[in-house]
Length: 147
Image (cartoon, rainbow, N blue to C red):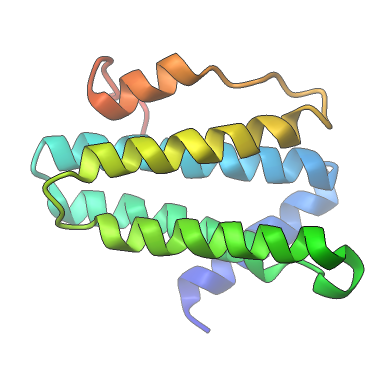
């Protein structure tokens, strides 16, 4: 197992000990969406190494979430989540170097946002709006202070 995957799994486990698991998943999905928005920014700016690193951050978090699924206890729902995480990991892996990367980032983020907001409904966290996220991905806002 790679260092990045171990780190993602460790971060998930640590988060679940300090906040409820549903909130931890929501916050981790926020980190995935933020990483996608930043990867899109770097792609637009032709900063491909940084875009690759941000994409890998999103992938690492999704792998950590997938790794922590309990397929025995979760049954069919956990299997569907496993499929969703795997599909998004594959989609993010395929984005690098594509001429339509921004379109792909938009599609991936839109689906993950729906999933993130479903998790948020089980917490005290607010729903995340689609427009600001898509503006970030498509370059309609300035992400220079987003880290």
